[in-house]
Length: 310
Image (tube, rainbow, N blue to C red; front, side):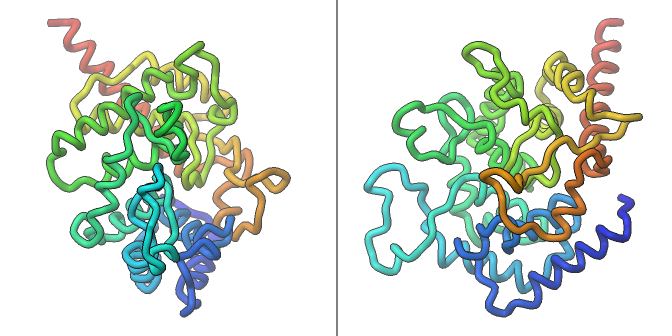
């Protein structure tokens, strides 16, 4: 995919950041530092399909951190807390964070299902009855309602990074996730049909863990293809209609930035993040996602036309 020179320069700067710090830590102090931390640089590089450019040293550090510095249980009840003094020093994680790490490392060529099998087990374990997941532990005790934002990264991790026939558990996980998105019409309350968050109608890139309607549509069309399930054609078409204000001559324009200098998601950015997220710019990465959605819609329509002729 064609990139302008400024993006190449910004990629190089992120590579230097990840490669030049021998004491680089994947901890709350660095990894979760919005936005200029290791996790964010790696995720942005991954989202533009350049994961192979991440320095191997950073990949090794990330795997080591996940193996030795993370409490490998989602803390819901008092019994889930670590008890030993050494374990108490470990960091708790959420579904989004782990799923993005999983996608980065798997795309790089790591075999996490062999090296760190607990991550896939975690993602599959915490699906709620409505089909989604929630990074808020209280949801597992009280509401039992999922968060769309928390749901997409784990679904994507299993859908895109399974190198074997889906197990029964994995198939159910993906199908239930699709049901959750369909029942919520990608952006709507299941209860009254109102749009949960109007920001989700605005295409966002890079996303990291954030949600927008195109992300949900992309999951559904790929789920339909890989699981040989009926595509919710009318729902995807409705999504395309909602996206029309951001489509110009078939190109998708950025309608929102994941960071907000004036809001709760403020913090120091980095050049690659800024280059990829300029408001109003055509995003070749979002456009590529849009093209895949439209292609799958077209293929579905063609198959339907053939079926109607029989």
